[in-house]
Length: 258
Ligand SMILES: C[S@@+](CC[C@H](N)C(=O)[O-])C[C@H]1O[C@@H](n2cnc3c(N)ncnc32)[C@H](O)[C@@H]1O
Image 1 (tube, rainbow, N blue to C red):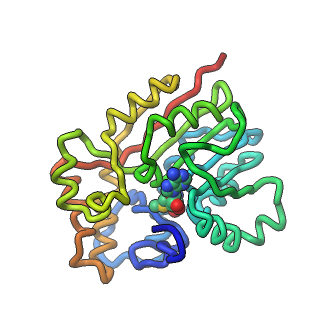
Image 2 (tube, protein in one colour):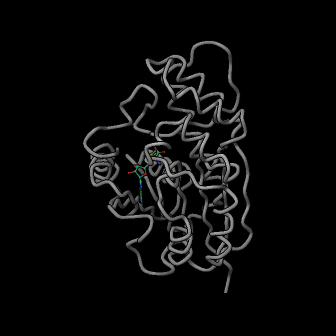
């Protein structure tokens, strides 16, 4: 899925991002490619604001893709160092290519690595902040992801995760009928309440779950309607949201101070 073919080059994405986007206001009329790219950057900004990044922070993005969002985090939120991790070596190669100038200028501040969300290749208590944007729908075991992020965060550290989840467990059958990538298993799509429980079981406190679906689904659907995919199953995401089967969430959780 994220291997040899560059998914970000599909018409439904743009600007080397691969996410549905966060649409503050949807103005009737044609959406430009720049506006589509900005929607994806805005999803990152929405997540990153919740992290309250300090200039001394060491941050980690899990599932960074081509890492244009990792770089946005470095430029606009200014942690001291940021790591981008992705399961796909092809994505890490693209990230390294696309961001080569910045890496050459500040190699100690921007570090990419191949690795799994389920086995983070870092020592315990390495990071002040950890985030993941539209990647957790691929993680096969969110309980393991929760305990891995808890392990690598320092006491007092914060996690922020944005992606889509099932609103309730009984939605699974209908979602499989509507969404090809769920039916094929590319998107695993857990139930939101079970992820909340996973975070608590891992030891996180102040777990906060917020639906941001009103800023995601309508805008993404309006964009798909302009593309070659306008008559495909991709239009079913909005239907599934309207039927209350799926929603897009921003979840934050803190690791306790000792
Ligand atoms: C939809 S893309 C999102 C990329 C980026 N966050 C963005 O918004 O543009 C999901 C990314 O998650 C990565 N991924 C999937 N499973 C993973 C795992 N178990 N560990 C780390 N990364 C994973 C994929 O390789 C892909 O690059």
